[in-house]
Image 1 (cartoon, rainbow, N blue to C red):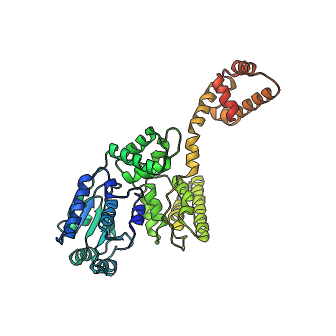
Image 2: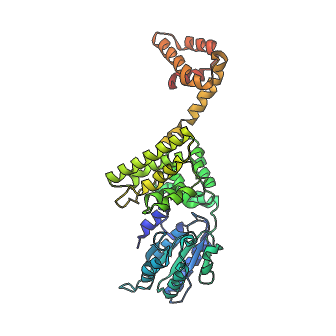
Length: 414
């Protein structure tokens, strides 16, 4: 059994506190409330299947409904019910037991359409027996209600649709979260977060924390959200896994460059692993993965990727011998933030280098990496020797055809 707070954090909506905070799906929330009303009135109801895109509030709504009704939440995930034996041993006892005070529990089976691909031959029959025998309300969640993988549920559940959330609703949610957490983000950046979230509230909230306090345009940082499985889900599959196969499967599904994933893992290992030996083993696996990726690139022998992938995903996952911490937010890799923060400066340097090409007759990269340092050093030495600013300005304009702003930029940054 999980607490409401931990269930919400695990599902990425750690700043959503009540059903009133679920935006863009008021009709679905109303259906949940009517369901709870019937349950309390003793009316027999079929389980609910909440379906719709990721990040629209399906799991959060179920958990918040339980909180509102003072129900226990008994949440099962991929590791809990992938075969008939585990369903019989874990789910059915939970669903048929009665608490001391006859209090309801909510049986929550998350992402049933994804898990059904790993069901053994008798698992679907065991789920149907669970539905038949349960003394407690049951809620399933799924992305696709029409998936053939869950066709066995078609006439056994009532459906509640969670639609993709509109940009205006996402913006209101972000404004509320920003205010509550004292986060600073410009209107333009919050609008970019809402636009690029594609209706995924969970992604939008995570992105808001990523770009909070960032000056200037944040769209480069937000570009990493264009992916099949988001980075945060990949990190969860690594840090909370107890098997070898799960992290590798998550790696195969995430549409992000491996060097980006290395940076994310490197930044967040200390946020999840609490034991120093676990952290050391995880970093050793990550370092070995990086070495294999480099060897593959240099030698063009891409069999090395097989070892690199295993070390980066499963190696980091199995490095832990202690329970991971699930109470801290994922941090955006500092190395990527630093690159983004200096992007404008690097672009300006290249523009100035293009001007200097007329007199220095060299590549722009060589000018940025070498000649600008020489020019800046000579200018600072001239100032120290007593050359006036106006005189220096005229000399540099004559020699290099640089404007006053160009000269100032070189002197201050090289």
